[in-house]
Length: 450
Image (cartoon, rainbow, N blue to C red; front, side, top):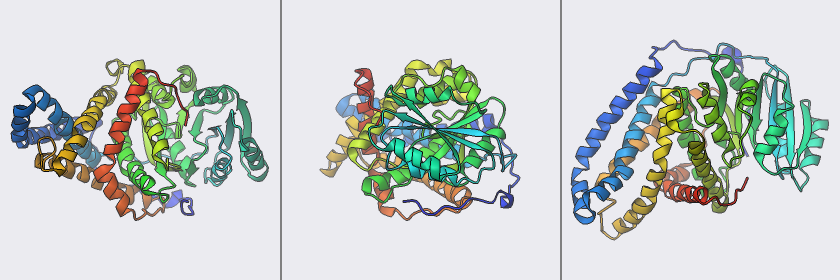
């Protein structure tokens, strides 16, 4: 369980005036530093390239080292400089009161839905909150739990039913009943920090008119269950959050995740709601970006979700995310995105299957060979990627601690063992799982919501 949370007094928050650097300047400055790092890494890895070329041929050696060192190093360097340059502007109004609607699609959530609604009821948001729970083919006591919440809680809860299985069916059905200018999607097992909705609405109201959605910050709530959830705690806290910050800086957050995000109602209705896709939130976000709209990220709009506690469920989840990325690339080609930053960010996804495949087929076997003294693939030169990765994690850790957790009066849990396994071994799980997801999408395997 997460600790007892307290709302934040918006009156005591302070802002600091900082040197303004235009986004376009940050973009090219980051690329320049990344290019310098790439040149250094090519120079350092040249003996490694020659040795591998002698054994496997130059083209294959170049592909392997490019996938294991050159491209990841360039991307990490770009990420680090971008994070150092990121200065999110303060919200213009820390206490908004716009009426909003929250959509919660629920399928067999009897043990979680009441608590989720309870945390919504504890929000310090001064505007009216309407909640629509969509019962999607539940066979347990989910409906009764919602009815109990309607009686005991002060928020306005509406229960509707959708008999077609699939989250996109549930959300599209509920969208017809939304009459507010903004609405939020929230997973049925996700708990909100008491000030979360206030930060989310404040961000979109302080943003330019072309901003159509704001993704919230999702963290793990059940990280104490086992080693797998402890690793995922760092993935959400560092890995996913860093990518969200990077994309938000360049005004093109690529996934306004269905677990917790805010949308402009008229924009979602204009693109026809959620698509029939396993990664419905990914495809929806890319459709929004294709309209030349922007998607932001608000790190202080924190929610705590239940992460998979078994390898089986983690594989299903991450394979589904990988399939969703492929669906998005098929639906909206990166070169058809109107904004240069979004072209670049979605373009990176084109090479992710190559990186995951290279890691799976060469890094993992190469690591096993290294244990027996064969450093042909994994050797001293590959270790140069690790300091850069550790540096990016350190930058984000101190930012999360100083500008998010302290502001929200949260404490970072001590999880050293989880971090060690996350830093050294998590990718050895994620890359093969992603490859599995790509294969599922290529051969159109049966979809699973959960």
